[in-house]
Length: 112
Image (tube, rainbow, N blue to C red; front, side, top):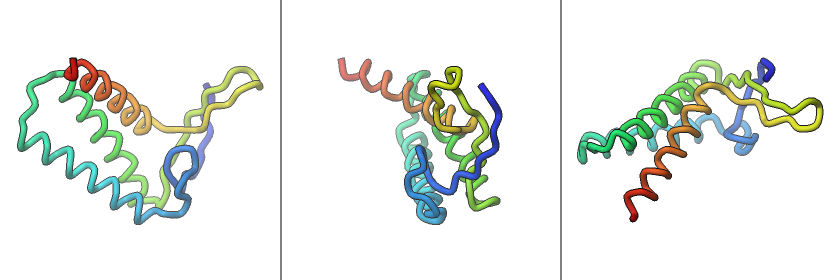
């Protein structure tokens, strides 16, 4: 793992470059939807509550960056020697991905 500062003016993997306003609006709508769901349905599943909290936390982190800097500050780079480099990301991205993964597990378990 290396630290490398990158100004990400798009979303994951560089998509939607320079669409700061659009990405901010979408992020806000998703966060509002999650908060609405939590308030209305008051989920009791610990796994569901944790997954939603992680997603909201990561979204807030990236939204703060987009609002303040007009880009997201990515700074973590994973690589295997000089053979493979994973795209640069930040802690907020880890929270969103982890939360989404846990949400998928919850949905699969609930479907059974």
